[in-house]
Each structure stands twice: as C-alpha cells, then as structure tokens.
Length: 164
Image (cartoon, rainbow, N blue to C red; front, side, top):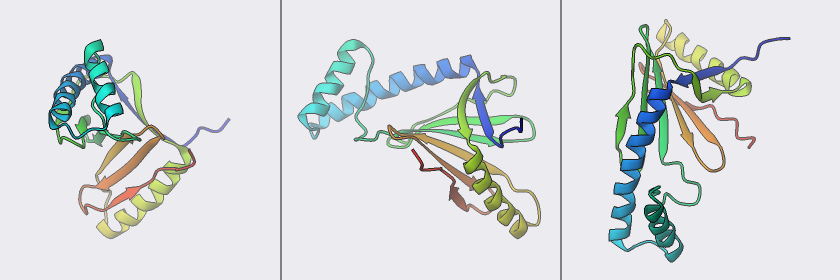
C-alpha cells in the first residue's frame, strides 16, 4: 500500500489545554463586548447570553464562523505554533521546543499537498534555495481553509481542496 502525501501538524495535550483556557477567556471578553454594542440581531444576542449563562462563552462570528487560525512555522529546532483570533487580533504563542505533539490539529491532504509542492517549487526556483513557510489553518463551519505563505517573498497560496 502506497503512503499518502500529506503534511500533518500535531499539538500536545498541554498546548490544547492552554488554547482552551485562552480561548474561553477571549470568547467571554468578545461576547460581552458584542452585547454592549447592542448591534446584534435577536438570535445572536440570545445565543451569546445563553452561552454565558452556561459558562461556555461563545461570541458571534457570522454564519460560517472561522474566527480562529492555527498557525505553524517549521524551524530547524522545532515548530512555532500560534493561534490567532482574526477578528480581535488576539494571539497566543504555544511554541514549546520540548513538546511532542500527539493530537492532530492540522492536515494538508494529498490533493492540497500536490498543489502546495508545485507552488513551493516555483518559489524555490525564484529564490535559488529552499524557502521557509508559514502554514495557516482557518476552521469554518463548512471546512478548513489552508493558506501557506513564503517567509522570504511574502507570496501566499490558498491550497485548500474546496471539495467539501
């Protein structure tokens, strides 16, 4: 059986717990700010109030959500790992040079990997060397959007296989 071409990014349980704690505090702050503005529709106001009452704060980010990005940057020593709320701009750096990831948090599938490799080869021809890349996974209610940016050229590709 042939191995599939994929890129898999993993996080440790400790990193996931930090994300959960950070995100819960952030969601509470953003949800309360949204309620204070009074510019939400009734269903969103009701959903936010209900989430706060349950102790599971959840801000409203529109129909498809997608407020959080998992960002990975492989380095020679480790994997830089950050999570960013792309609405508020808040970010947490979860880089741990000693952590061993055991939970999959991002996957670039075979189709996406082929698209990515072709793009990376064109970048590396321009650079004359191997480039450094930042991988960003943006979860939505429809699927995960995958964008990769070259550190040296700032060029970016959306390698998402939109066959959701």
